[in-house]
Image (cartoon, rainbow, N blue to C red):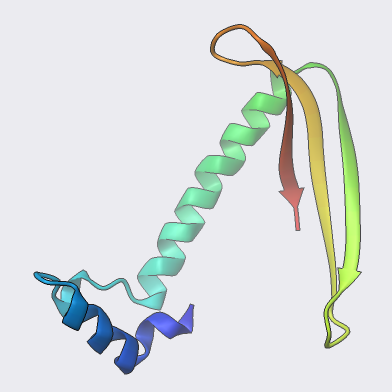
Length: 97
């Protein structure tokens, strides 16, 4: 996210942005705040959906390493719930990374 503070990127955005001003460009601290806020909203929404699911919740995980041997693990939740039209849908959400 540090790339948004790069002067060259900011110059490019201002050049192609028409009425865009430097104050309109999100900097890394504001971008981090927005991402964190959105994460909290989506996580709470996911928890509510899982609590209202029909039947059991299943979890799967996947682990891998990148080229630098850094390890990663993802946990995905799978469950059935009704959509807004009343149709039964299989949902999957990334629960942890």
